[in-house]
Amino acid sequence: RLRAHTHIHTHMNMRVLRLTAALYLAGHAHALALARAPVAPLAAAYGMRPQAMPRLAPARSAQLSMQAAAAGDGKGGPLAKLRAKLPPPAELKKVTPLGAMFFFILFAYTILRDTKDVLVVTAPGSGAEIIPFLKTYVNLPGAIGFTVFYSWLSNKFSQQQVFTGLVSTFIAFFTLFAFVIYPNAAALHPTAAVDGIVAALPAALAGLSAPLAIIRNWTYAVFYTMAELWGSVVVSLLFWGFANQVTKVEEAKRYYPLFGLGANVALIFSGLYVRFVSGLRRTSTAADPWAGSLKLLMGGVSAAGLVVLALFQYMQKKVMTDPECVPPSAVKQSKTKTSMGIKESASYLASSPYIRDLATLVICYGMSINIVEVSWKAKLKAAFPNPNDYSEFMGAFSSCTGAVTLFMMLAGQRIFKYFGWGAAALVTPTMLFITGAIFFSLILFGGSLSPLVAALGTTPLMLAVVVGAAQNILSKSSKYSLFDPCKEMAYIPLDAEAKTKGKAAVDVIGNPLGKSGGSLLQQAMIFSVGSLAASTPYLAGCLFVIIAVWLRAARSLNTQFTAAMAEEGAEA
Image (cartoon, rainbow, N blue to C red; front, side, top):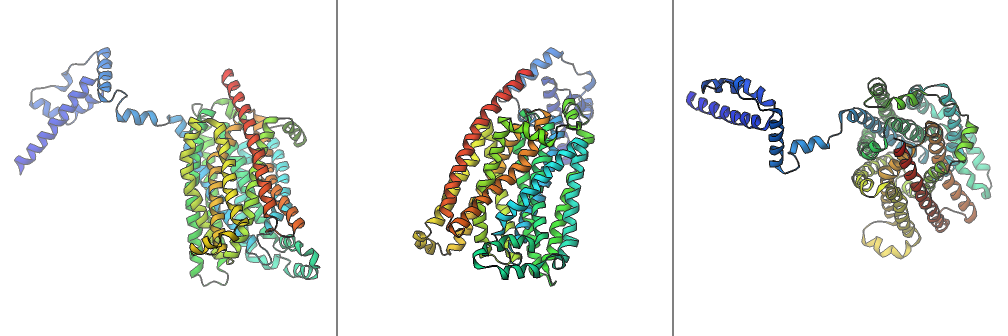
C-alpha cells in the first residue's frame, strides 16, 4: 500500500512538474508559485533547483505566450473568452445593485397589482365595471396631484432624499392598510348610505352604480390608486430616473434588457408567492381568511421595499462616490435641485417634440391595454367570483407573464444589437395589434366558433378567459422586454431638467392619462350603445386607430433619438 501510494504521489508530482515547465515556456508567472510549492521537493530529488530555472526575456516570454494562445483556437483560450465576456469590475459594481433593486421593486408591484384587482373587483356591490371609473376619476387626479407634489419635492430636496422619503411613505401605507384599515373596513365604508342611494336610483340611471361602488368601498379605491402609483412613481419615475443618471447609453443597451430578465424572475416568484398565500387561505379556519392573507401579502411588499431602500443607500455610499462607476457630472446632477416650476415645466414640455412623442408612446400603450383588459377582467370575475380563486388565478397569470417575458428578454437583446432602437420600439404596438385582433375576433365571431369550443371540451366563458390571459401575457411581456427599455433609453441623451420634469410628466401623468383615456372611451361607448358587449366592435376600431398613432410617434422619436445620440457622440 505504501509503495502504491508513493507511486501515485510521484505520478501526480510529475504531472505538476510538466505543467510548470509548460507554463515557464509560455511565460506565465504562476509557474513560480507552482515550482516553489509541491514541485520543489520533487525537483530537488532530481537534482533540479526551481529558483535556478532560467528566466525568459520579456520579449521572448510575450512571443511564446502569443504562440501558445494561437495554438489554441486562434482567438484565445476558453478562459480568455470568458474573461472578455464578463463586464468590467466598475460596471459590475454598478449594475448588480441596480438589477437587484429592479427585482424587488417588481416583486412588490406584482403583488400589489394582483391584490388591487381582487379588492375592487370582488368587493360588495362592485365588479370589473368599476375599473374605468377608478382610472378616470381617482387615478388620474391622484397622478396629477402627485406630479405637482413631486415637482415641489424636486425643488426642495435632493434625489436621495426624495427617493428615500417616497418609498418609505408607500411602505408605511401598505403596512397600515393590511393591519389597521382593512380590519376596520366595515366601520369605515358607508355601505348602508350607498345602498339607499342605489335603491332609489331610477332605471335610467342604473349605470351610476359603478361610480357609487367607489364611494361604498373608498378604502379599496385608495389602495388601488396607491398600487397604481407604485408602478408609475417607484418603477418608472424613481428607479428609472436614478438608473438613467448613472448609466451611459452604451451600458443601457447591454444591461437594461438584462434588468428585465431579473425583473421577470421577480414576476415568477411573486406569482408563486401569491399562489402560496392563496393555498393557505383554503386551510384557514379564521372568520375572514382574506384578512390574514392580506397581511402576508403586504408583509412581502414591505420587506421588498426595505431591501430596495438598503440597496439604494449602498449605491449612494459605495457606487456614487466611485468615479470609475459614475462620472462626477452624473453625481452632480443627482444632487442638483431643479428650479423650474410646474407651469414652466408644462410649457417647456409642450414645446418639445421629443417629449411629446415619448408621451404619445406611453398614452397609446395605456389606452390600448385598457381597452382589451377591462373586457377580459369582466369575463374573469364571471369565471372566478370567489376572491381566493381570483387571486390564485392572478398569481398563475403573473408567473406565466414572467416566464414568457424571460424568453422575450433574450430575444430583445438581439433585437437591440442587430436592428437598433427603432425596430425594438415597434415590436410592442405590433404585438398588441395582432393579439388584440385575435381577442376581439373571438368575441365578435364567437357564435360561429361554437363547434370548435365544444370540440375543445370547454365553455365560451373559459375560452374567453384563456385567450384574454394569453393576449395580456404576450402584450405585457413585449412591454417589459422592449417597450420599457426603449422608453428609458430615450431619456438618457436629455439634459437634467428634461430628465427630471419630463419623466415626471410622461410617466406619472402620461400613464394614468392613457388608461383614463381608454376608460373614458369605454364609458362613452357604454352610454351610447347601452353595454360593454355592444360597444365591442367600436372599441376594436378605436384600438387599431390608437396603434396607428403609436407607430407614427415611434418612428418620429427614432429619428430624433438617433440625432440626439449622434450629437452626444460628437460632443464626446
